[in-house]
Image (cartoon, rainbow, N blue to C red; front, side, top):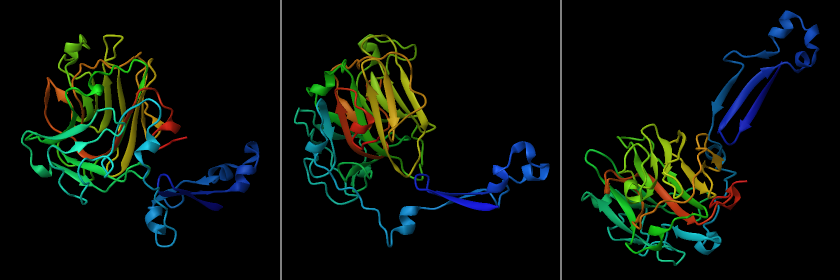
Length: 335
């Protein structure tokens, strides 16, 4: 018998198995019952996995280099509609120290220069510390900074960054396709009731856009949310039909950064998490977004033209491009 140790650097585990190459090489028709029984040993001491954080384990003598930050001009391909980041390049006030409060009225500049700046507002007279600046970021994120939202229910609280009333992005229909990207992280432990919290959205009632999905005309025309089970939900009311094709992910993990991308090629929508297509993307046709000229927002989703709770967790760079990008073109490129 031999024992194999497979070091899985993606899953952060060592997988162990015990087998007999000699028995496996024998003609199956010539193996005795005892030999067939011992091809592989599958008991708890012969087949198991050991969890190990390889970065932490080897940091003392072989630290993995962190990719450097990238300037905005390096990550705005042709067709970029808006790009927001929360470092000194993206915020109109100094980014501040890790954990510092982001004051109401702070402006996150649209670094394309096309006038889609966002302004921070507290929801429901929330406490100033509802939104803080953070030095945390996804390893592959261009900006090494993020915002830490402390939204929640009972009572509703939160913070949102909204575009101005006349911002171009409010009324863009994206009928030639689009890609929406965001870096997000959920806290660990994930405490409290945060069911259906919004990550980003366009304001406005789907009923006012002439859409009727059979559920509620008060739902916004486009939003990226989290279900009670931590399933990612992307719902959109296209311009070419009366429907709301909706994507659902697996349960998102807590305590680690993720890259989320929504890609529409003017025919259908595909949502990616960390460069992989989620399993529950709809097959329904979908072209454009039925925007109503109302603001775009990060950190919340309206219902019946009102915000309830806000987002709970971290949000990093957000970029919108007016065409379908391939994974290798994402803010964090995936092959």
